[in-house]
Image (tube, rainbow, N blue to C red):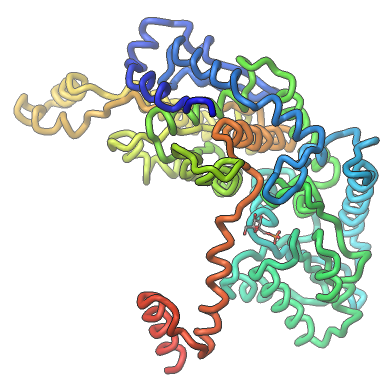
Length: 541
Ligand code: F6P
């Protein structure tokens, strides 16, 4: 077994100097620690790295299994070893899918057929040619799903708001909180509503319950089995379960076991995106992701953007012991990106054993969090600037605004860049004192206030600049984070494509649900019993 690289990283991390000094000593630093891919640029100069630490990280990557695992993944090997599945979501965004085959199946033909069916459905809906059971055209689509079957389309639909061109309205329904479906149907008429049940497994409790509630809503409005068959669609790999639910085969779009839920935006799970931005723009989203795939596969290691982000993440987690990573899009439309990357990163790499089931010796995925700038500046940035907690941050800014308020955009950009600068350089006691004195304070007043104004600085950040928030760049951006997560998974030696940890809670909820319905709770722990009792007391009042 090879020695763990983390002690050496920790030792190197302890030697890193001041970023302020590094910039002062080297005016070319921003040029040296910068890379571009597919039109997106990454400035990583405001990171706690110098030539020797960056070289050590590059060596770590060079000696890693990233290349062999990537090649195995592209070849269709079952790199998701615990589920014995290939990992082929990259194939879904290939322009040319001809000849793609896996285990004797013509995957290229299957992808092309799925794309053609999605395109036809979107066109029908856009042109008002899809009529419901009463003969009226469909005006609303409800997309029912959760996790990877919802977060991706919801985020991308939001990100591409300026491209919306659909006469049909879209509503998302995730979560088993009945408030969601109850609220959605309030505005709608079943006669003009189409329901999409998006579930790879078609066994996820939340999605099933919401689909059942919606089916009942149709029935309550007098819809018979034929009407329901006309109004319900599914995207699933479990055709049998979807059919048992009452969804006719021609209304089931495929999912494949070689697409993980959190990597499924590029499949028929992306249908809401195609619906809202149109087929051509959806094709551009795929193209952007494909371009990032090509960059990731072919760019030299030192220029490879996903690998660069991955190494920096590893550096902070395993070198500095950071446990969190902020994702701060300076774009209102990208405000769901942190939630999306949360699932992508934390469900992929939040693991405690390696690919062979052996305990991991060090921490893996960080806690991903964030929201749109500048809102966060008036909330949690205080902690980023002055707390002892170190939280590396990714700042993301589209350079061209998707609105006419150009001065707003200039101010937004100024805040974005100022935050990275403030985190990096901080404010010394001397500077804070001078500021207080310049504001007219006495020396005594300045001495009392200045310590509160000090910011330690030396807080790392990346800045990603997108030319604009178009389908192409959004596709490339999402693929960038996918590949980052992949590289980190390989560097940690774990399987990024399973998620066994989510099972325990699901298993335990069954007996608790029974107990809440009056079943035996005596075998449960005393805390859980007390919680059940409180629920039942209220329910039975
Ligand atoms: O519970 C986790 C999970 O399996 C995710 O990985 C997945 O994206 C989500 O649930 C939804 O699964 P499905 O598409 O099978 O309903």
